[in-house]
Length: 376
Ligand code: FE2
Image: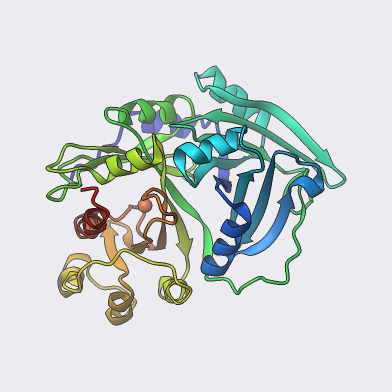
């Protein structure tokens, strides 16, 4: 594997024209937001936070906001058929529409990115209520996905103007999910470098890691990937492109079922992956499993780890390392019927990488699932 570092690294390190404070929220367009919110609360341990819909003066959609630690999801659905949300769900199924990024100045974020060629989704707009103001702007990225810039430093309300507190007497215990570690996009054939340039030129990101199809190919499921990081490293967006293999790439299967480019997985950090994954499995979350033989040799590859191997093996948690430490990770099966979006659960113990050492075992597991769906 070659770790490629572009020479833009130093340039962008000095002038970060788009300082991002992290992921503000992830908004999903779904077929049934009420049920989706219940699923994410029950299975993943989120709590009700806020709501917008007809009762709050919104006529075309409803949105349920749920939160766990620093992780905020918004589940939005259309109330009418002739509606961009309904069209989005018809075309893509349930999926991520907005990757909302926290900024100190949403107007400047919009100016900086649109001046550099970003296509505007929303000009800076001020939303106010008795709790203060939120300023929001946005630009388009791959597929129909959008980056919103959220400035909420002058807001004290539960979520944002237009939303009311969602009081529910059902708030299951949390599962230890903390925040978004990274979000991966799948793009079409020969489109990866275009989007790498977009993140470099329009958003001031840098390419911190690259994997080519020789690194990431099993017998069948080839792909290429480049990891893009914001100037301060708080936001990371790896970009995948399918590669030619003997049979259909897993990225191609995604593109077919999502009907285009979109978010492949959201990686969520935990401080104790064994506890978190035990709890998630008890609540019915399904994970990709690698063969037990993976654990026969894994410690030869990664060296000493603090955890006992036994629970990792029982749960199917994968281990990888880089120069700075190691990481533990596991991937859910798709979260909806289309084989599109899934989650990764990750615990970093020093490592800043993304688990390349697990790709082969993992992709073989993925191919078994893909074959079961008849899409290999
Ligand atoms: Fe990942």
